[in-house]
Image 1 (tube, rainbow, N blue to C red):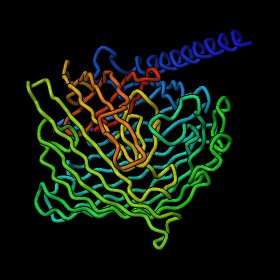
Image 2: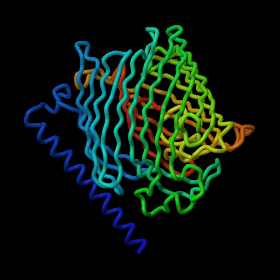
Image 3: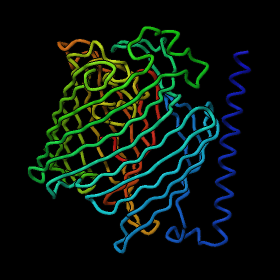
Image 4: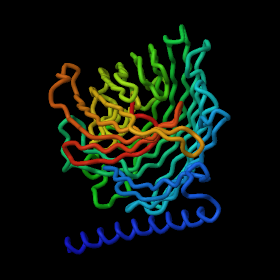
Length: 419
């Protein structure tokens, strides 16, 4: 039976690949009658094939037609990028994406999508004052998701892969942050984020649900959180989106309390350093260090604790470790360090704008810990890999990152640098 199941999976993957190839061929055929395929500048959109092997989400294939809208200087101002895809567990799905870059100081985006099995999401975000030239900066966000791919292995730096469970996170939150720009580099920021969370069975029946292995885990029934955070940051990067020199230095503290509407009370604080050195017009070294502490964290639900793993650095919500899925390691305290050599290997004028292909070998390591007095350089989880990035100056970065860690390889894709 095991051999038969293996053969069935292989056949399914090949059938999905053939379907994606056929769909791509149909798209190319329809374009060919009206456009010169040998002239990329005449194409109405970029036909991007989607192939991802996320440790949590499984294998996804699809087609992502990207429509670019440029200004008179041939700089991208708007991106429309809907997609259709197929996931081996979630079934058919798709996402609407619209990203707008009116200026370096202001941008906004709207995304919404779902799949046959459980998955839904809506994400709206608006930012202004990003360059800190005015007195105030503001960001507002509305976020809803029902994510059936989440995994939990238990709390701790040595949580066993054999204890892998699956669950659905359903959450809804609104976030508002207001920054006071003391100078164009020094900012004090206050953030408020009320969040509502519920935990349900996941979509992967090959794994036990979280309720089976961890029925007494704090937060397994969900909860609410009203997070207040104060942050001071100094930012002397030469670009907010595509930095090549300077750095970003942050220190923050946050609190959630029952008296203010949270279902549990806890505190946390931490700091983040990002530094960029250009040693050659085509080579930039990027470094990142992050540490977080949760001294009053004995009541914290697992979904609010420090999370390590995945492809995004989201300050208090998650830190990247690209050889593992999102949230692979969870506990009260976290440390991680990353370094990349971002190398520009090819430039061309494509689709009405200037594009650059960047190859970025990277190395990173991190760990979580329960007690404050842990050794931050012991028992680290190392990861190595390489990233491929498409850059459209001055705002847009699309990436495919391939990492290898202690539990195998992982492939991630998306928009923006990991840090």
